[in-house]
Structure formats: C-alpha cells, structure tokens
Image 1 (cartoon, helix red, strand yellow):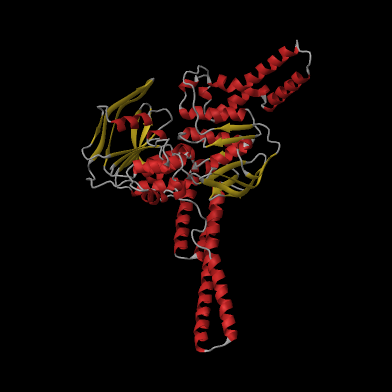
Image 2 (cartoon, rainbow, N blue to C red):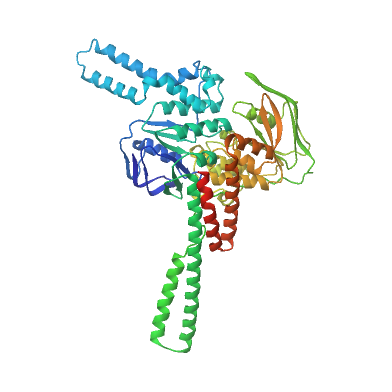
Length: 581
C-alpha cells in the first residue's frame, strides 16, 4: 500500500530523513514513534500529501484511495447546534445531497457522460462508506468509545476529550484506504483513552498513528516505525516486543564491544612488544610486521563500537532550585473553593500543599482541573492563599502563553536571562537542541520541542512550588521518563494536572481526584489500585512489575559489563513480554 525507497527530506536548518525506506501493508496498524523534533508529523504529512514536499527518493502509494486524517489539535465551534449523531451523519448526508444534485442536473442536461461518471463515483464512495448501515455503524462506534449515552447531546456539551474521540469516529466511519492520526491521545482522560484504544483495536482498515502514549503503545498496534537520528527502523510486531528487541540488541552490541575491546588490547600489547624489539634489533622483516600490526590496530580502533549502543535522544530535564524551605511549611492553601463555567463544576473544594509534596489533580475531561490550576496561578480568588515562603513556577498546556511564537529559540532564552549564545547552546544541549538549530522559529517547532523549551525556561531561577498543566503532553516516551526522574529529584512541591497514568504513578506522592463536583484526596497506592482495576488486569500489573525489575537488573549488568548474566535475564524476560502482549 505505502512503500518508500531511500527517501530524504529536510529543512534549510535541519535534515530530517536520510535515505529511509519503509513499507505499510494493507490492514496493518502501525505506530510511528521517535524523539521530539525527529519529524514524525512531517513524515505523516508527506505520506498524506507528497505533492506538497520536495523530497529525494521514491514514495509509492498503491490502491490507497482516500486518506483520512485526525489532527492532534481538535477545535470546534462552541455555537454549533448539532447533536453528536447529526454530526457523525454529516458526511453521509453530504453524499446523498450530491447524488440528488447530480440527478437533478441529469433531468435537463444534454451531455450525460460527465454526470454519469460523477454519479458512479458518488455511488462507489457511498458503498465504500457502507452508507446503507450508517446508523448501526454509528451506534457501534459510539458504544466502543463509551459515548453511546451522548448520542443525542449537542456538541457544545461534550468535553474536549469526547469531542476528540468524535473526530476519530467520524474519520473511521468514512472508511478511508489509509487513516493517519497525529497524537489522537493528547489530553484524553483515562476513560476516553480506553475508548480510543478500543476504537483502534476494532478498526479493520489501515492505520498510521503518531503517538507517545505508553498505554496505547502497549495495547495496540502490530507494527512499529521508529524514527531516530535521521533514520527509520521498521519492526514487525508489538511495541513490547520491539522494546525487548532493542534491549536484546543492546546486550548483543555490548558483548561485541567487549570482544572488540579485548582484541584491541591484545593488538596494543603486540604492537608495543614489536616496537620494543625493533629498538633492540634492526630487522626489516620485523619492521614490516610492526607496520602491519599497527595498521590492523588502527582499523580495530576506528570500527570499535562505542556507547550509546542504541542511540536514542534522551533529554536531561532539570527543574529549578527550590531553595531552603521547612518541610512542614504550607506553600498553598485552598479553602472552600467553587468553580462555575457555564454550569457548576466544583464546589467546596479544600486542600493544602506542603513543601516537597508532589500532588496530581486527576479527573475526567471538562471537570475544571485546568481552570482550578489557572486560578491558583493568578492568586486573585480569596479561597486561594499562598504561603509566605512560596515562589511559584507555571507550565501551561497552551504553549504560546510562555513562549513567544515569533522568537527564535536563541532570542527566547536570551530574553529569559541567559547572556550569550554560547551559554544558550550549553544550556539547551541537555534538552537535545543542537547549536545549529537555535535560529529556528518557535512557531515552527513540534509540540514536544515547545514543551521541552517550556521546561527549560521553567528551570531558570529559584522556585519551590511548581504548577504543571499536562507537562508530559506531546513529549516522546524517553522525554516523559526524563521528566518523571526530574520531578522525583525536585526538592520543591509540585501540583500537577495530568491524564498520564504512568507519569502520575511514577513520581507523585498523592492524588486529588475530581469526582461529582468536588475533590477527594487519595494515596498514590490507592490510585494505582483504582487505575489497574479499570484499565489493566491484576496479572498485567504483576507482569509489568516483574518486567521493570528485570530491566533494572539488566541495566546494572550492562553497567558492570556482565553480558552473560544480562542474557540470562533476557531469557527470563521473554515469556513475560509474550504474556503481556
């Protein structure tokens, strides 16, 4: 269906792909993964509309037909007064109207050939969309997404996550030859994420999905495209199997590197002995042997495998210095807070955040979490009081609030307080921004790159209370893990709105659960138990825990060069990965 050979493309300031090749066969569900800024969205757009790009190499699209697309930025007209069902019926009704219009033209037209051709095309499209069963298909898709109770609601009453699921359903109902989705999971709550998972797994067409969601990656997809460092690696299988294959490759390469190091050491010892002998005895034959062995040593050194073995861009995220604050100090007090936005959302909410506490606000889309965090940031509501020692930093899911889209990266950080280009280069290198890319305009960066810049700006200065609104959104999986490590190491307090179960479970101390218009405190242990009950099986939790333990042990083995022990642990992990798929 889709085939590329030696495809290369880039911008004046950045090469994205260099001679990459890939194949997507009919009916496959492929996940496109990779570090932020590697060009995943651009590649999806190139496949969708190759005529818009000047690229080298070949791109073949055979028997694809229509291509559907779901953007990561779903917007709607709040005044659109249609129900969910009517909205999903719009494409079917549009075809009916076109057919009726063609039939009307036929009544008076002298030349029917063109109209008959158009009429046949409309009938074929109607058949491809299975228009005859559109009502039952809509009901089935809404049930899969757990939105069947919303069928008669107006769009304006849906949450952002629910509306995003409708975009997926609408495109799936059109039954395109290829459906491309760009981060359809961003900002979805846990329930809507489950709905998206079920929609993907039930879909019988061909899918290419750009995603960083560890939940979707672990529960969907039978093919992986990994875009990294200008190259693309294909893997025929699940994401869990791909992770295992990467780890296996890492062990193999370390074993090979160890063997090469031993060979180099032997060659170095031999060259050194021959050199010593050559100074003692003048012998042309020995001189030629010495020259040959020295050349061989240079070749060994030139091809020697060096770490990292599987090179993946992973940022080193830092959070600001927190300063010295008493552990018992109250940095934030919310007392009897209420929120109304078109309708009552929250009432009589009270909680406090102490120094060094890490608290997540969790709840369904549209429950008022971000609005609460914004009011906390503004600090003008009398129900919200900061402690005397509080110094506050804010991360916004609306990137333009903290980044000037017209600035270059360099301009943004010179304005933020760094003094020279060299200082900016050195600072942003840990966030995987190359020096030759600092002149790029912020408006042209990917969502993940913008969020990394937000985090980099947040780290400047001293702050002991961080308000984070969906900080892991758009970040690739490696950046998400780096963020979790940074939050865990941060010595200040964190109040975070997030829908990412993994980030919450890996670095938060407790949860504020939004339910029925109020907030209920919950321990992180109780939260994990609740999430796994509704989203995973007990067996899966046990398997995942065991897999993480083995991964940590293998990492320690690689650090000390114990490759044989690492291979034994890999063998132990293999059936666990198979059972999790």
